[in-house]
Image 1 (cartoon, rainbow, N blue to C red):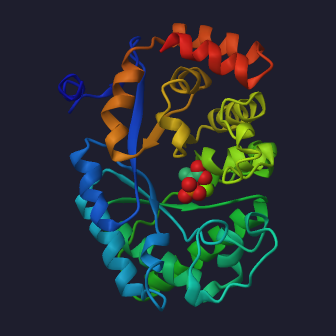
Image 2 (spheres, rainbow, N blue to C red):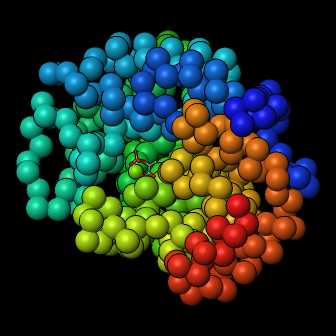
Length: 321
Ligand code: PEP
Ligand code: MG
């Protein structure tokens, strides 16, 4: 099987009917950038920067972060590197930040919310990312957006950082794209608004599934609800993609669902333009995409959208594998 997959190495990611997709990799550490390249990823669709902040006792400095982001940019040699700003809280803890224990960490003071209230920490990270944009196709992505003000405030800070760097004569990409994770039900509901002010969307199905279903996947008693094939989650995904395409911004998926062979035809039909998956999944997803024509994927999606339960949908999609 591995050998067969190797036939897809170095190829474009194309549907049977010829439509092209971008197939990126998710990475956690800057050292993993080489794994993305070795796996034949066409870019990095999600660089989870939390790892730079974890397993240590103090914040990483701007230089440490700059080195990490620059290294990823150089390793990818001009291919896109989407760097997600700090996404702490929820399931991701950083002891030295002294975050308060919360009753509902997933509904709490986390990710972009925390960063916008800790502007020094946030601007340090943004400065490191913007500086790294001189070394490749670096893009900025904000996690957990729920209201357009968060995007506006984040973008305003990026502009502040750019102004400061310009002043100091530091080189960077003036047009560095700024996009968001669409991973909350709020972001789904206002995807039309967000798409007008965001350079790209990336759908985070890990969180989107949990928030849409009001379901903690770590809780065995409710985990049965946790599925991206729930009609509610699929409608959310479709709406996000529709809004992105209407506004001519690119729309990717970096949650686990992007590598699920049952999801692939649906995502192709909905109009997803970029898949971002773990390194070992790259060739598999390229192969899966290559097996579907757009017309066949459309037929599947039409059937699925008419179904009313997760079970009906997953039973049907399993028959296609
Ligand atoms: C997601 O929520 O789908 C996602 C990609 O982000 P993370 O898993 O890091 O929360
Ligand atoms: Mg997430």
